Length: 115
Image (cartoon, rainbow, N blue to C red; front, side):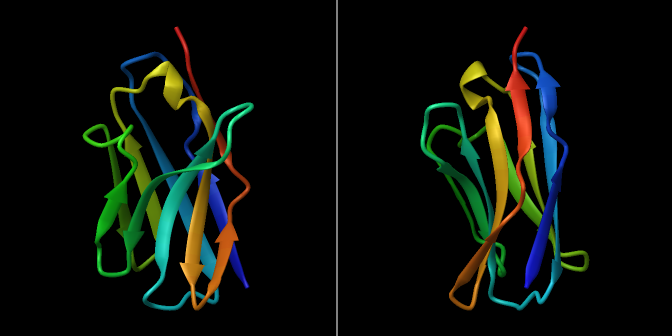
């Protein structure tokens, strides 16, 4: 089993920044992929960014150039640095890990972008 705990959400003004963190614990194996998804009210959950074990990153077009995903291997933690936030970025952000054919989700952290 794997447990994911997110932190770092909150209220920010348009143009501001937030950094989300996700700590994974339990049976963590190498070659996993960690990432962030988000779900706004009335919308489907969508991919934001992923990072492989080897550090290869992938981003949704809507966040390219503004968001950066990174990971710290020693602590099994993945981060999402979000800059130049827009009202459309407001959502519940979920951490995800995929390994050995299974995936796990965190409980989500709310990001609100409003003046």
